[in-house]
Length: 91
Image 1 (cartoon, rainbow, N blue to C red):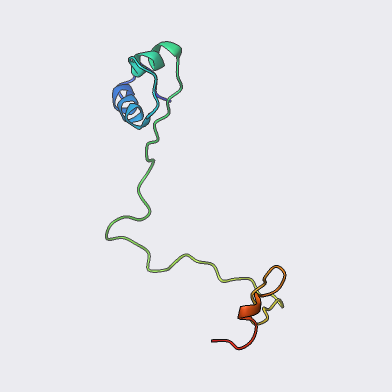
Image 2 (image 1 turned 90 degrees about the vertical axis):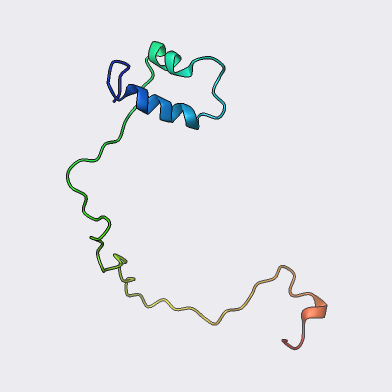
């Protein structure tokens, strides 16, 4: 949590102010400080597991679970059937 007396306050609130398109008129940063707004700054902890030049070669995708379910052939569904001009031969 970033408080108004924290050294990160100005950088965090300036970034937030830029993304507030419908902010009310006046100094929004001073209002946040006076009203006791809660502002959080996310900071990384520890070393990065992956980064440029250090990416895993595996996709990370899991194999689908085995199941007896299957799909029939594709058949479109149309409310009240297909239009008359489309019934008949396929193009």
